[in-house]
Image 1 (cartoon, rainbow, N blue to C red):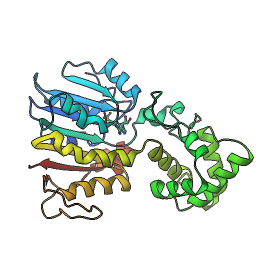
Image 2: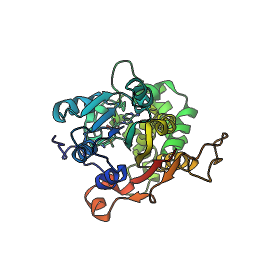
Image 3: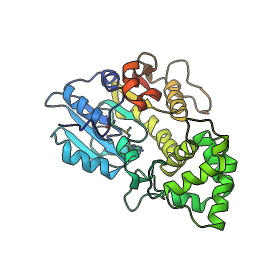
Image 4: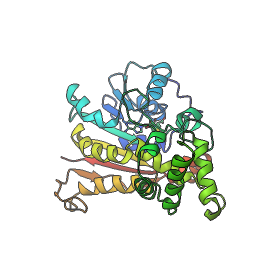
Length: 312
Ligand SMILES: C[S@@+](CC[C@H](N)C(=O)[O-])C[C@H]1O[C@@H](n2cnc3c(N)ncnc32)[C@H](O)[C@@H]1O
């Protein structure tokens, strides 16, 4: 299987695959296939009886996999990782999976293709949906057109940690009512630049945080992550591993809290109201990418890799 590493450089590949503690005949899940860098590594460690089931919301990722990653041990599925539990029930694999890997966020091809609308550096429609199939979700342009100034400001603050969220939201709503809908990436980034650019430090584009926030909202990233994490414990066999690579503080916090809650002694952790059974064991401390990897891959600089094992 070729991985076309030039398209998406997998982050913390060795750490993540070591963390899965791969058994040659095991079943493994790659919850975020992307361009298959991690999947390729898992397949390499598996024997002829091993299997990988890989998911991605993005139909382009799955189409890429079908074309370039042909391997009889690999099953590719288009859809959210929130479907893993149900899918494992249907396949009779609930409680039989040796490891699940989640490498969160966007892939380089998604960022690089202007027409996907993820990048404020490239001119394209303001889309940002990972799942572009007809029935799924609204675009970032639609979200900005349909929400109130207050909701826009709240989202930019909460999901982008944008301190100037109110100014930006006001400018967006003013533009929408006085000039017309904001439909392209450059329209939005230029509007942000002209509104708050002078208040931003040099070196950081003033649209960075707004674009992150919109991407998270449009794809319901945190809601999906939250609703999926607990269910993965039932998917795993006893001794199975969950490895999660996260990239920004909101993801780090969510993953950390979920894992902590199932560790012995932490059953009643905030903000959960119901205590949890201590079903997990922590494997090592949170890993970060080596300085060498950080030097060659900018995305790796913010990566945190957490590993837990199912004990009951
Ligand atoms: C960082 S990339 C994964 C890269 C991959 N590990 C590789 O080596 O090529 C993240 C991928 O997760 C996908 N994704 C994001 N949220 C998802 C979700 N809720 N369910 C399934 N896939 C999702 C994105 O479409 C993207 O392709």
